Structure formats: C-alpha cells, structure tokens
Image (cartoon, rainbow, N blue to C red; front, side, top):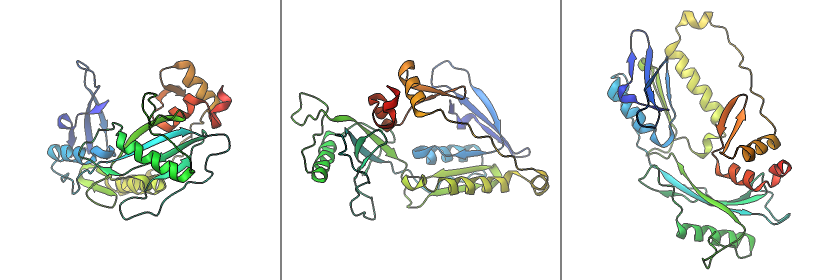
Length: 283
C-alpha cells in the first residue's frame, strides 16, 4: 500500500497520526492506520515525503536536502569452476565513488559493478549498452580474458556466460552525510541519504532513530513505567527449502512464518534461478 500524505493528518493533542493508505489499483478503498510516529525511510523519495508532510503539519519543516539519484549498473557472469575471485577486487577510491568492484556471490557468480552516474530520474533503471561495454572491458582487464557485454546472440559482443544485468538507484542527496532529521513536535523523523555504508551502519542508525523517537513520544513517567520486552526472532528456513519454494511456486515469492515475501534482489533471483553455489543443493 502507498501512503497518501496529502490526505493524512496529525492530532497534536493526542500525538496520533491518521495515515491514509491505498493500493496502486484504481477503485481500491482507502485504509486509515493510526500510529504514534512516522519513520520516513522511503529512499530516493525521502525529500518528497517530508515535503508532503510539511504541507500537512506545520511542525514539520521542509527538507534541507534534495534527492540526487545515482544509478549503478552491474553485469553478472557465471563463473568457471574454481575460477571466481575469493576476495573483492576494488580499484583505488575517489572522493566521489569507490569505483567498479569485481566479486563473487554465494551462488558462484561473478559481479562486475557498480558504476556511478547521477541522473534526474528517480526511477529510470534501463540498461545502457555503452555502460555495459565499459563494465565488460573492466572485467576483461581484471581476468585477462575476453568477457562480453551482451546477452543477445545477434550482437557481436555476445557472451554466453552472462547470467544477467541490472541497475540499482542509490538514494543520493545534495548533502554528503546521512540526512536524519527529527521533528519531535510531530513524531516524525526522516532517515534519508542512506547509501552503501548504511548496511554496516544499520544497527547504529536504527538505535539512534528509535532513541530519538522515544524522546518525543514517551513521557518521563511512561518511560519509567515501561518495561523492556525482548522480541522473539523469526527463524529463517534453510536456503534449500527457500529455493524449492521459489521454483515450485513460480511467482517469485517464498513463505516465511506464514507470510509471503517477494524475492526482489537481482543477485538472489539470479542465483536461485541458476541453482548454483549455495542454491545448488536445491536441485
């Protein structure tokens, strides 16, 4: 469901948000959720979400940053037996990018990428053939053997070892740092500009966000009387059963603890489709 911020509201006396949501399909009914707080972590659209929220609630300031989408393109090759890199191969980084990596996945496939190209579009993830040729040329230098850039047999640069290619859009902004902005009088916090380093920093970011929100939505008396409860972790099925589900269902989803989840990451889908590496036991 998508949040319709323009139709949502915040009750300042009760400290409660009424969030209006709707499905993408036409003629679908709106559903209203009540919540004490909102964490704006919508990636490349985080500035738009905060702008919409600021038009609804005066206690929320417009964003002090603007989105700067940066596309990263990848090529994924199947790896010859025992010829995939055991460690990531990285060029010397610059102040703008870490450069193009070459590394192997858990599925014994070789990934070349990403590139770093700024663009105005927040959704354009079309493959650029000229960039694919640059990636293939980089892989050729690294492995000292010719590696093509096309999965089309009619192309002169056709390479049968290409498993796939994809483009990811990083949520870059006009600022270099993470954009974590708390609006305590509206129980609203923006978590924007979180790019690659956000993976290793995720636990710290999450702790900081939760602590910031608790200061705004929990009073001193409530904080002293509130007991800390340990959440029960959800055990994950083994990879073999997930791969079997993925193939038997045929709709790109798996079921974990009674909930259906769509497999979205290209590297996981390519590995599971090929059933190589750690997915090979699912044959």
